[in-house]
Image 1 (cartoon, rainbow, N blue to C red):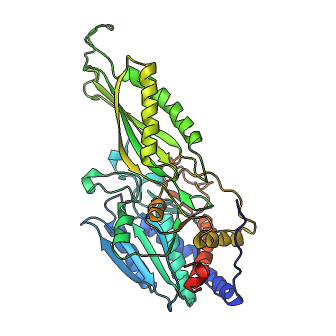
Image 2 (cartoon, rainbow, N blue to C red):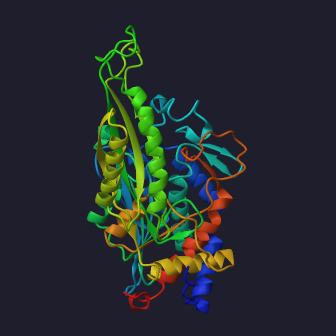
Length: 441
């Protein structure tokens, strides 16, 4: 990792930064997060949550607008305009949750609905629980707290602050709600009035990332014939699709491990995981299924295109068929999004790292390799230099029993968020109290 470029604050900028940090209020943040978590907002149905945030940002003094995408969902775009001559900086997070929050989540989400998976919020001391309370609603709430503190401190901005939150940030596709997901909301915002010079996206992990992976969705169809449980094994008229699928799964798991190692570069390790297996009818177990589907998500390094990943997987399938000529299968890539990268020397990356170093009191080290995909990749692909900043995750020491593993995203410890708020606030003041020419624009 190259050393961070040092552009020290003036005495006045330092005073503005300290004044703004002093206005950060963890109790206000906790209440905001509780209230927002209590508004259910699955992908494709975020209208109520987004309108709540619009009202809060408006009350804080920003020009705040709800951007509808349908009757059930829409985005948030708020602005504090500076005196002129500076850059526009977007603070961004998605606002949708990845689960439905009802019986349709089970048993796939676990054995029962723990506090971190419930669509209603619960507060225990400095902890806030509920579906999405950590990701994405802790990010939304923290960014709103940053904007509020900035307004209260009356920092005289030169550039313009944009605050944006969009639906569709979760890596899902919801057919019944206009196929929401896969970054559809951030594309909508960028096509309808949001035009930043730089962006900071808040997402988990206490690092500054200049790039993020994309993702590819694949399905393998293992084929057999429709069967009947009352016949003996070995009949040529019946071929199981389920038993051969086990061989496919074992080979695929090893390929995903090798793929991640083979495609690691920059700060990205593009992991992949088998998401599920589907086939047959629970109410007709006497009739073995003619098709067993195996589906998975594999992450895509920004230096690799979805087409290249598709070709790598095609090579795997060809090798598997050669080794197992008796197994009949087909496959398709049914979803993809390329990764995105920003030059690490770009102003916003360096400014974010200065904020990190100021808060941590040490030089920025090599970060952990990243496999998490966010709307930050879309922002970068659409020409917006973007830094990803975050906080330690998942939270440790919960007083409530939680079942999230890494998938519930619903347990937040408020003190964990405050250092991240200070780091982002540093980059905001660093960027928006300077002229465009000072920022390389």
